[in-house]
Amino acid sequence: MSTITHKPSEETLLAYAAGTLRSPEAAVVAAHIALCPESGALVETLQRVGGQLIERLPPTRLGENAFRNLMARIDADGGESVAEPARNDMIELPEPLRQFSLGPWRWLGPGTRVRSVGVPKDGDCRVLLFKIDPGRRMPQHSHEGVELTCVLSGSYRDEAGRFGPGDFEEADEATDHRPMVDSDVPCICVVALDGQIRLSGLIGKLIQPFARL
Amino acid sequence: MQPSDPSELGRLIEAVGQRRDREAFARLFDHFAPRLKTYLMRAGANPGAAEDFAQEAMLTVWRKAALFDPARAGASTWIFTIARNLRIDAARREKLGQREPDLTDQPDDPEQPDTILAGADDAARVNSALSALTAEQVRIVKLSYFHEKAHAEIARELGIPLGTVKSRLRLAIIRLRGLLSETQ
Image 1: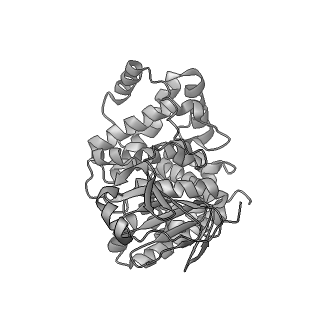
Image 2: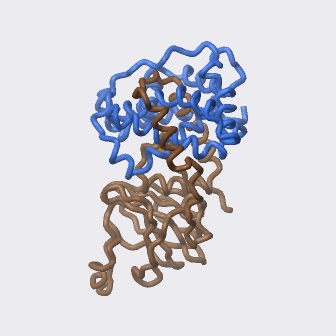
Image 3: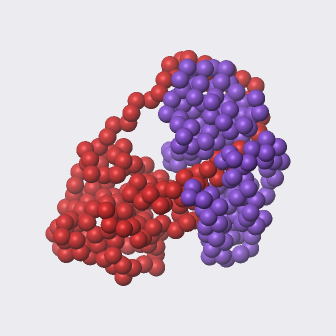
């Protein structure tokens, strides 16, 4: 695996460790962490800090029968461990993404396909998988809010540099980029996106109402 | 038992995982459920919703106890990640009955003497790393753990620009990483 040079900011990793990221953003950060031991180690450290912060919190009294009610619930449903979640069919995905259902691949333009990832949406923010052929650009899209990208295979290049497997890019309203795939295999990346994708060209405009991305 | 003795808490989780030990689970519940309720109330949940959340988190502890590996994570860290994962669940978040988070700087419990004494254990290491930060860094770190949309709110609360909050938070995290990395 090539070296990972683009990582989430420390604040983003803390927000992930603290559980304050939105679900779609957290899924993309989780994909990066699965590929980047260094970010993983920092998140682990920050989880230890979180554990200790919980430990230091003053207790708040619970209702009189809180424990008894919980045990009754455990007795009622057996309380046994929940079944392993189903796995989707893309074995090449990092483990944290395998648990989500995947929509069908949709054609977005020459050499450009996208499928939705069944992470619960948060407002407009949702998770998409892009598969883009060598030499093609990411489809044009507006940036309303944040866009987080993690490359899973292949690579692309934009004004911020070259992004290969595991690399993470954070773009916001101020960023206007259409990265170009520079690997000789298709580039697959997972993206948490707030804004709308604008399909280019006549065919794009015709299918836009049906694309529901 | 010292309720906050980290290795004892770990043994209790193992007892639940291996033997479905209800006595051990009751002790875990007494220790963690009231703190998990506080955790969610600080995040802006009303007391009823925070209590439901604490119950839900402890139910997950019961179900997943067999997966606990003391070699990989301490008891508090493991419980924290369970609570954190429940919180990430957006569907659940909508049920938390959010009110405005309380940003006043509530004091923590005084240091437990046993965690201060146990120099070798991880809880003591984390506590001493936190005490190496400035008061303002600790405040920003704590608010970041406990509140949604923390950065913008902290900036308003402290009357400093968002970028300043982020850079101070970043320095605090880098400090913690330096003090807590396993290669030391």
